[in-house]
Image 1 (cartoon, rainbow, N blue to C red):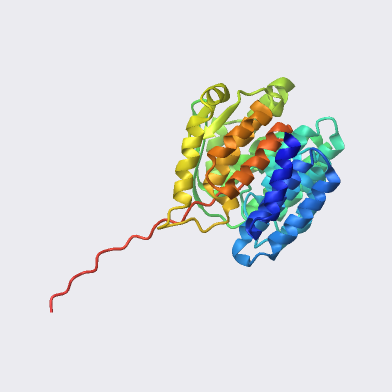
Image 2 (image 1 turned 120 degrees about the vertical axis):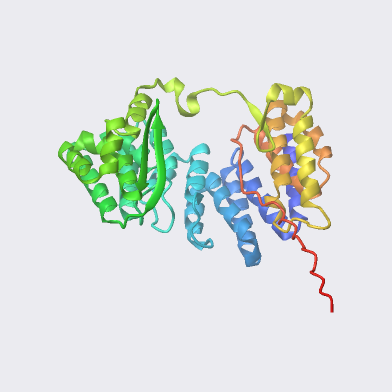
Length: 398
């Protein structure tokens, strides 16, 4: 049955319009990694070629090709990233997380250790990669050094995610190297032009407020500064009054205490090793437990998916994005992946409830992915453009 579903999906893919065919080939390539890596890469290359042949109006498909490539063949993803239309916040993080979830740890370590300057450095993904490399200290150090170089090369006084990463990882480095790194980071923050902010740090009833971006950024790294260079920490408190006030409330800095607690946590309580209840999302806020979804045959998720499909296909305001990016396509994929994971091939009965041929194809591929034990795959969604509001014309008496 699984082979039949894949065969049917491939046959329909070949008969589909180019945007649908490109997206389906890419997702088929991901599924094929569970069976034949060589064939998976062949399908990936075919899908990428087609995605990049489609006119520039479909930049979304090119972005999808890179994120899927990270799950199939990371080298393809890294090669293609410079070809996308400009840097995108969060794109590198998505790609690295896809690598990690699909077992490409070595490729992720290589990227994070020597990142391209064009992309925003994915500090949160670096933390995940360091955690997964817990038995390989050299890889952990290499990632941390790559993150430090990226931080020193970034414009602006702030770098989202770096402070926590450094608080967690600085002890991986030799003492003098870590001390020099923190001095360089402080110098980088101080040399940048200051600006206004309304940042606020709070924990256990203590609050620190900042109007200076520079002082807020210094506070973000202060815990490590104090541990590595007490003299530098004291001089900063003497020079920056908002920082000094914050240090009264948080003597060890803001991130250091959390980092210490996390480091002491037993492995079974952290990260992916902590078993979580299984849910399916319904809309933006509802989490439906899988036992209830199975008992009701995914009634609520299908109602939400069909509601979104009605919006995507509204004749007065149809969704102009590639169908791959329709919100309804993502909802149907979500349902069939969960159904495939928990019901196996019997979940094929749900396909008839999807009214659109192309969206049914995408969902069928995800059904196979769920049955094959692959991790769930996300993606971008683009809703229809808001309908224009026409104001009544003002009447002028002549």
